[in-house]
Image 1 (tube, rainbow, N blue to C red):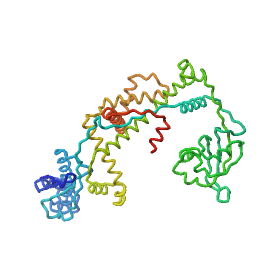
Image 2: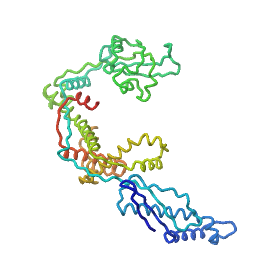
Image 3: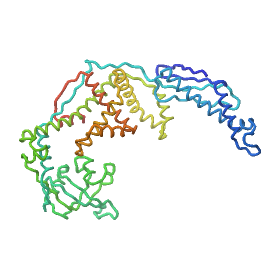
Length: 448
C-alpha cells in the first residue's frame, strides 16, 4: 500500500492511497473461507458450499468492505503519523469508474483542507481597557430600598397606588370587544414599576378589586421579557398577544418597606456585623461591585477576542470547507444555506484556531487534579447556598469523584477552566488601562 500527499497550495492538498492485491486479498480470502464453513445454501451441507459459489454471492461485498476498512485506517494513520493539521475531515473524490468485478489495483484520492499557519503574540503594544464598575449612590439607594421591601410588611389594600403589585385575570377579545370563546385566558402579575406606558400606568392607580381594563399588552412594559413574565407566557409566543384583552383585577399587594435600622441590618447580615447605615450602604456597594466583576471580565474577554481577530490575518480553505459542511450536515443543509451561514462559521473557526494556538504557545493546560479541585469548590458553593456549611473534605471528595464519572460534566468543567485560564492570559499579556464607570454607563457602552 502506498500513501502520498500532493500539496495544491498552502491550504489544500490531495491524499492518494494506492492498493494492490497483496494489501487486501489475504484478508478477503480468509473472510470468504469462513463463509464456506457457516453458509446455509439449499442443496449443500453446511461447510461444503463450493468456494466459487461463495465468491459469486459474497465476493464483491467482502472486497468493498475490506478495502473501505483499509482506506479508513490508511488515511487516519498517515494524517496522525505525519502530523497533518487538517480542518474538517478528508473528502473522498468520486470513484465512479471502479470495476469491482475485474479490477485488482485501486487508487483512491481524498481532498484535504489544511489549517493555516500563523504567528500570534500579545505584547505591551497590545492595549485594552479593563472597566471597573462602581456602584453609585443611585444604585445603592435602589438596592437599599429593595432590601427594605424584601424584609417589609405585606398588605392587601382596597385601592391601588403606585408601586403596588397587581394580580389580574385576563381574557382575549375579538375586534368587536367580545370575549373569544376558547381564546387566550390566563392570570397576570403586574409590577407597576415595569410599566413604561404612561397612560396605562396612570390607569393602574385607583383601581379596586373586580375593576376591569381593556388594552393591548404588547409594548407597554420595559422589555419583551417583562411583558412575557407579567402575562405568564414566553417571549416566543408574544405575537399571539398583539390584540386587546380584558384584564380583571383580583388582588392588590402592597409592601411597606422595613425601617432601615439595626433590626434590618441584623436580619440581612447577621447580628452585630453591620452597626449603622453607613456600614450597611458600604456592604451593599461591596456586594454589588463584586457581582460586576464578572460583567467587566466578559467585556474584557470579548474585546480581546475582537482585537485578536482583527490583528491576525487567517486564510481558510473556504471552498473545501463548504463542500465538507454540505457532505457532513446532519440537518441536510443546502448549498444556498451553507453559503448564507458560511461567514459566521468561518469567523467562529478562525477564533478556535487563534485560541488553540494561544493556549499551546503559552503552555496552558488543565489537569485532572485541577478539574477535581474546581468540581469540589463548585459543590461546596452549591451546598453553602442551601445552608450546608459544615461539609467535610471527605464528603466533597466523594461527591466530586461521583460527578467526574459523568464525562459530559467533566468536559463542561474542563472548558470552564480553560476559559478562566484564557481570561487570566489576557490580563497578564495585554497592557490594560483601568477605567472606572457606573453600571448605567457600562450598559450604554456595551449596547453600542
